[in-house]
Image (cartoon, rainbow, N blue to C red; front, side, top):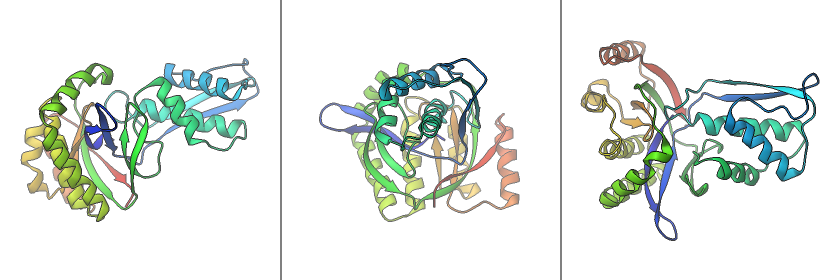
Length: 274
């Protein structure tokens, strides 16, 4: 569900786009049912289908006759890493189908051949280079938030915004460095409030290059709602509040009314792990 941080990180050369993805308790599923169906059937979705071909080529396998079915709770094109989740769900299904031990290296290799990816395939927070598919640093499972968020209209083509993002990062390099330092310190000390403050800084910096229409209003009302911070999908259309503790029912009603006044339906979800 977006990121707690997206910004530059220099790793052995030119700066790359680094992410700390914000996992949420929503999922994608892929099922393969052997039996009736044609041999070599592929799942719906171009990327999932390509993942199947790459997996089979890697292990020199062939699919038995059967059919695919899929289901996802993730919206497409808004910053919820839906395509990455679909690919990983498909690969996990294939590992089980063929009785193979799950191999994270294979998953990473398939993702690298298809797209710039989030780290949703991990079971903890991580600082992750999205283009290189490299985990720079794992950040554990001690941090969690309750969220209230909305999805603004429109979608973002991640590949099309890479160049403008890198130019923006170069102009704001020192600010991003301080933001990332503060974020990592928050994870080290298992301090959700510090992580939320750094996430707010990252979201504010992102507003200078990929703005959200409601950002100013959401930021202005953060203290009123007692939120610890703000998060966004930096190359998507999600924006919302981070709460270290679950908001009471009355606060949820007020949050829903506030976002409705901005023209959006509010959703609530638990993110992270703590």
